[in-house]
Picture 1 (cartoon, helix red, strand yellow):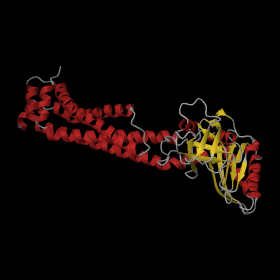
Picture 2 (tube, helix red, strand yellow; picture 1 turned 135 degrees about the horizontal axis):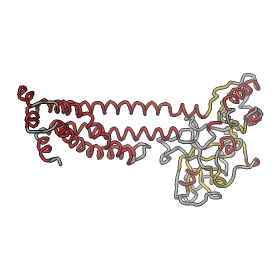
Picture 3 (cartoon, one colour; picture 1 turned 120 degrees about the horizontal axis):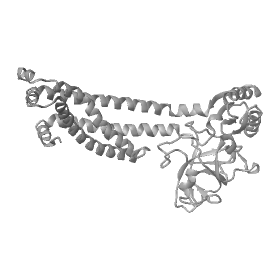
Picture 4 (cartoon, one colour; picture 1 turned 135 degrees about the vertical axis):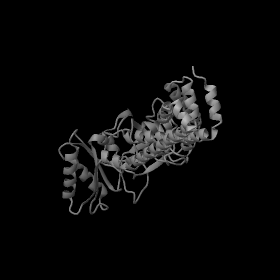
Length: 411
């Protein structure tokens, strides 16, 4: 069994270099854990299901001449045209698109006032979004055809009195409730604000922004509700196709919309998968940059360990030669340097884990990042000692090949 005390005593006399390496290990570990936390969180966000039939959805945004004169007639005509395209399962006007980074939201509160102002994405539609988006209805029902209304925003801002909500919004409005169907939510926080009756709950529907800093408490951007109201906002149409038909139907639907009305302009024609890619493109670049920076820090830390170990080998050539002359094996010399480096590294690991948790605590307080998970901390805690061992092996093997004669000549 190795006696650690002499190694610790020797390190104490070389504490400046040892502390520098331990500090470098601690800083690298703290940055590594938090960078990995950000990368994993961004990956989780960018791959999280939207709650829709994503593989078979696309959206069209157009500008139709004379739209302001008869917006609702224009919408219904466009919907009928889209539904007539072979391969279309459902089509509807909708005010906004998931993950498009553009849309509207409203602050909703529970009727009893215990939960106030949950900023939530507001989808309004002229047809069933359960069908058009392919949503999963888990409580209650969808809107019936006679419940859809028209609202000209130039003349009125009166909101509807019924809504469907996502599971995320339902659970925050009424925590622990077995069902929220028939319960009501307030459109705002004032006693005079309109009360809306919940008629159904869908499992999931991501808002136009996904997760956003200003959607406090909405970790996945899934607080949303749907109202059965056509408005004269911009022309967005969602189309859900039969499996495998999306790309063909998209081209044909876009062509038919443009041909149906002279001068109609097609602003956007995009699948939901393309919309997702655009929404998270910047975050993927950020994740890649963080991985690059973290990789460089690991290389720099390994280089620091190699440099310090190489310096100590040079300074101890005579001591190593004497130990070899007294019968020390090469493996004994290698193991000495590995143990020495391990002690330095583990001091850095303990300090680094403490710093990582403290840094993450600040980030979670001021951003939407979740707390670090224990596998990330454990992985970082195991990686740094492994890096230290690999970095010190080169100098340690060179030290093991020093002979007593070489040490004497080098004295």
